[in-house]
Length: 275
Image (cartoon, rainbow, N blue to C red; front, side):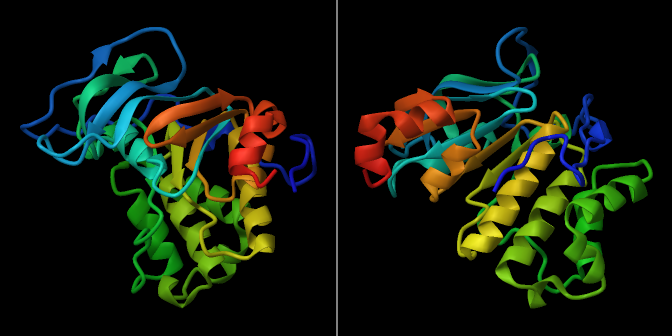
């Protein structure tokens, strides 16, 4: 499935990565400003506790998720474990009663999701992640909505990463297969030139062959230096490509380690990987 970073066809062009992020958007009235927080991983949600709304029950409990430059981080666990909730917390879609989120040396805990996009977060939700009535190219153009520079170079890089999208650039995205739609969704996130790419179950509903292809592209993206964090139901396959793995159970960290270490852990294998 995976291939060495010096294999032919690898995109080593790090210009698809945006080391500076985009111009900061104005946070909403309920949000504050980013604050300096030097040191630590490139992206980390540390000891996050929270749920949906101030009065709602906590869904994640002192949960810590982190990923560094050029790494692939994977969040796995049983259904209802809080995997997607932890991802949404990192993206600012959850009300935190405890913990912090830091990105590239800044505390962004109080920023809105829109402001986090401007800071360099690229987020691909599991569903409703494309505009079905727009063409493939129009979807990619929509991904660059916060940019004021020339987007043609990034568009070409996305087409190099996902050649099928070039062939279908004038086709309505809603007419594509499930795997092709996911490529559009990931490509649209990359059009922002993000500092970190976050994917919520990118292989949900696709065939094993398409899953392998998507994982290969994710490896390629991380090879440019862009941190990638994803939630995955296909735990074994995801941990095979993971630099860091997080197993969540009932909203808490149950096991943390490299993908290789988690695959070899007897408890993880017995409880989550089918032995």
